[in-house]
Amino acid sequence: MLDINFYKGKRVLVTGHTGFKGSWLCTILKHIGAEVAGYSLAPNTTPDLFTVAKVEEGMTSVIGDIRDYEMMQKLFDEFQPEIVLHLAAQPIVRDSYKDPRYTYEANVMGTVNILECIRHCYTVKSFLNVTTDKVYLNKEWAWAYRENEELNGYDPYSNSKSCSELVTQSYLNSFFCDGKVAISTARAGNVIGGGDFAIDRIIPDCIRAAMKKEDIIVRNPFSIRPYQHVLEPLCAYLMIAEYQYKDIKFASSYNVGPDDVDCLQTSALVDLFVGKWEDGIKWVNNFHVGPHEANFLKLDCSKLKNIFGWAPRWSLEEAMEKIVEWTRIWAVGEDVQKCMLKQINEFFKIR
Image 1 (cartoon, rainbow, N blue to C red):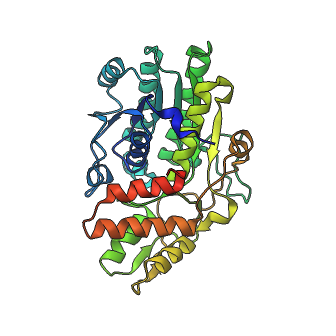
Image 2 (image 1 turned 90 degrees about the vertical axis):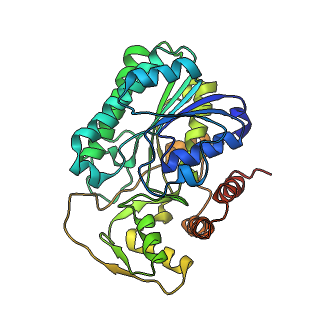
Image 3 (image 1 turned 30 degrees about the vertical axis):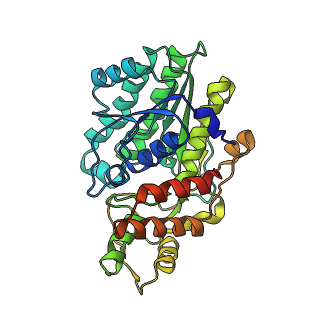
C-alpha cells in the first residue's frame, strides 16, 4: 500500500488543484511533507473547498488555463516537478452537452499540453493522468469493466476522456519509450466527500436541499454508480505514482472503484444521506428524459488489488458519516481544514 513517508520532500505538481478532488489531494500532500505546486483555473463554485479550507497556504498556486501551454511550461521550468498528477478537466457530463468544444479543448488538448511540458522537463519521473470510469464503451451490461475493455465514451465528456487516454498512450509510445518517465492512467468511479459544492452532483444537491429544509430532487434514482469517498481514489493515485516512480514496471492503466457492495442505485445513496443527516428530510423522484447518461456502470478493480494489495478502506456508510461531519462543521463556520486533516489522519492511520 501507500508509503506516506515517500512523499516527504518530493516536488509534486497537481493540475486541477482548485477543484474538489484537487483540494483534498493538495491537503494530503502538504500534510505528509511534499513540496506542492498547483495549476488550475480559479474555483468555479461559490462557495468552494479550495478557499474555505485555505488550501493555497503552504503551496505554490498558479491560476491558469490548461489550454495555455506557454503559461504551464513556465511553471514546469520554475518548479521542476518530480511527480505530476493530472486532474484538471471539464468534469460534468451535462455541461459537456452544453459546451462540447470547450470540453474537448480542456480534456484532450489539456492532456497534450501537460505531456508536452513533461517531454521538455527532465526532472519528471512519474506522471499519472486521472480520467474516469466513463471512458469505456458502455454496453449497459451487468459485468464490471476491466482495463482491457474498449475505450469509447458516449457523451462529449466521456468521449473526451477516452481521447485523453489515447493521447497518453500515443505519447508513451512515441516519446517516453526510453523508460525515463513512468506514465499511468487511473479510471476512477464517482467520488463523494465533504466540500463538494458542484452543480449537478447528487450529494451536493442533497446538502443544498437539506440545509434549506427542502425536499431532495433526484432526477435519475435508478442509475447505478460506483460511489466512493474522495480519499479512496486519492490514496490509489498516490500509491500508483509512488510505485511507478520506484519501478517503471508498475506503469499501466488502473481502475479505481469501490467493492460491489457500494455500487448503489442513486436512490439508495440518497436514502443513506437522509438517514445520516436526519432532521426529517426526504427525497422525491423527478425522473425525466434528458441528455444520455449511462444507467449502469461498475468497475473491476482486481488489477489494482492484485498488484498493490489495495482495498477500499471506508464503507459508503462511513463515507456518508464523514460528509455529514464536514458539512455540519462548515455550516456553523468552524475550522474545516482541521476537520479534513482529522479525516485524513483517520483514513491513512497517521498518528
